[in-house]
Image (cartoon, rainbow, N blue to C red):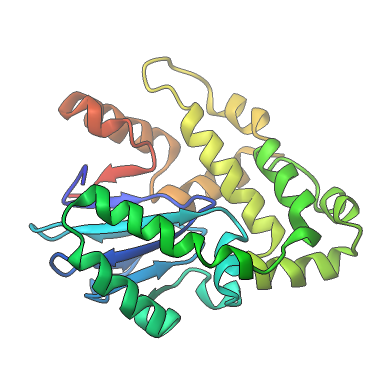
Length: 254
């Protein structure tokens, strides 16, 4: 991993991980206590705020990331149960998770693990749930980096705004407004160039914020830092290890 202890910024992805190494601990934004995660593995839903992770010395895991709606389509589990949560993989997926982890543990190398994981997930595709009803809205959110009106998303999906929220909560795990924020923050963090100074008011305008205060609030919730402090930490990370600093959703903690 890039850092032993790190800040993890939110993004529009759900993660499923199977663990074969030591215990991984996580800490919510603003919390003092580290919470050990399941030794077998875990599923992390969509988060709309940063969290911290402490990796063990013997890191050994394999995982897959799902686009919004992908986890629900493959496993049929209401995604709202996973919003801002990390759940033990065996508690969530039951015998399937236990069998998959056992077979992954027996794989002779990393390449074999990836092939096995891909094959076992692909075997579920014929039984996947359809998410066509919100597919147009998801495509628009992705294409426009979250900078779109909820009314336009509802119109594209041919449903009311209220019903769109219900569908998103079930299929994606969070309402469309919060998913839009994740896309916007992801695009914003990727657009920040630490070498070239730029007015934060320009960033706020470019990313469809009505005022600087709203921009600063969303930025602090997503990263744990003010915009200026985030850039300062990014510069420090680039100086210490340019390769690690390419992971713009991660920052060293400590």
